[in-house]
Length: 411
Image (spheres, helix red, strand yellow):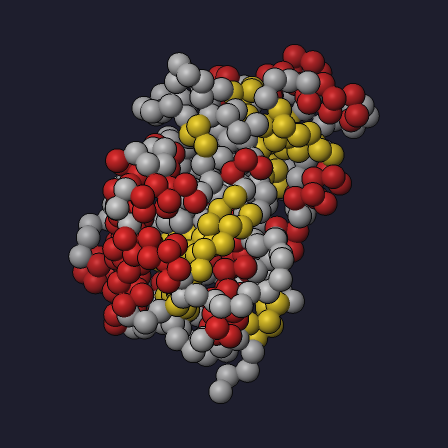
């Protein structure tokens, strides 16, 4: 018998069967519901019909990839684990940097804790930007689809991944990047049968296609097949998402964008304020680094209240919060966010200056995320939980609690 583990203040039972937690990048419930209604996802349809448990949850803010994946694997919000964007202004270095360095983590992961206690653990992520964060301090298997041809036993805990999976390395801008994650996960479950496995996909398809479109339904049909196979192999499966996705364009298909750096340069003088877009990552072709959340850093002596009111008066702005207000409302580390936090409405994105965004790669109208309007995500378990705890606000970072604690009680 293994004792319960306490990780970041939460208690987790030892798995009595393999647990697979899946982060379906960019997947609000409408994608799954539409695929089920179209007959493209029969296994997920059975779960929604009562064979499993379907809950609605909130992701963390900002509704971007890095903060939410790290919340899921730590079981806590960014105020605890410290990862509050894909990109941020590092005050210690005095420069803008990608937020993918494990030194920025302020909390250990559930995965590392179970591995330290003797569990076999595997992590497969689509993009390599997440690999080192998710696998920080973890003994086990950890690799990405993007760099699957570069894995080594020493670095990744596994080798010959391409041979095992039977697929070539996919393009980072493709549905195949996520499919590789699922095929690899199934192969690992068939052969190694890890105690805990975390699978994280990419939102390339969701940036391209709305729920219910043929492209989206085909993608969720692929997911359905592989999740059904993991179920056949006896795993407990918890499906959630890092964020939703919404159209950020007008009826004419042109992006709805507030260029906030341009506005601040006009009001205060060029370069006096700094706008940081935490959506920024190395893969901007499908969103042009445009999301619905921005950080504003201001010069000393600036009248914060007056500027907040002026930004709030811009069209399609949903909220402008001070550092303290945003840290409290969105559970963010105050030392890693701006003097102001700006959130736009569901149909609008925020940019810096028009000339700093290359939108030539947008071959379909802009779809993106980052705001409160992309917070609602599914939380689905492949078994009924029976009696559930009383009324609570479910979060995507309750995934391991559901898989290890509540499903065990139901069994």
